[in-house]
Image (cartoon, rainbow, N blue to C red; front, side, top):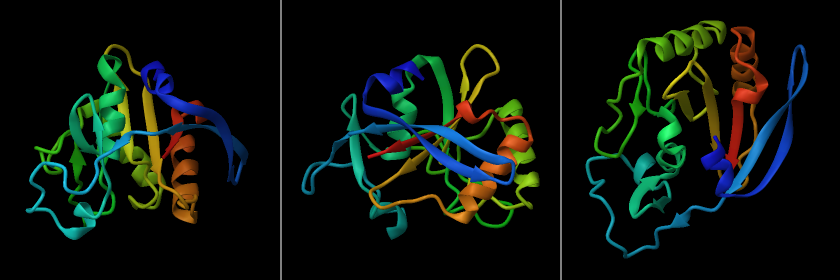
Length: 180
């Protein structure tokens, strides 16, 4: 997490209301280098417009979606995936660890177990799930990171998900918001 904090231009805490009271979540503002139109980009022609309309950023000379840039920025300390809740349908879950895997990454069993516990507490719904789930390379710590663009605010699904996560033992300090 220190590697992510080190590239933040600001660090604040934002309140989120749960039925058990208000929790304060760390909020980092990160300005990834945006890839400008006309620059060479990876071939994304096989992806739907809901993907290709997302802004691309550059991290360590690699062009990525912002959620994957967060993963790259966690460096060697954490492993993780982008939880693609928007494109997950029915029982099919889409997880990304790179542009190449096209949503076919897998969670290790320990992370999958926690993921499923949160979903169960969230009335079986994936809606509101934070964009990134990361786990320590060594150890059993987790991070859940929500990537928010300009004008993106917490909604009732996200607040219900936060409550579900906390109810299964996720600590508020494991929930982080990254804005750009």
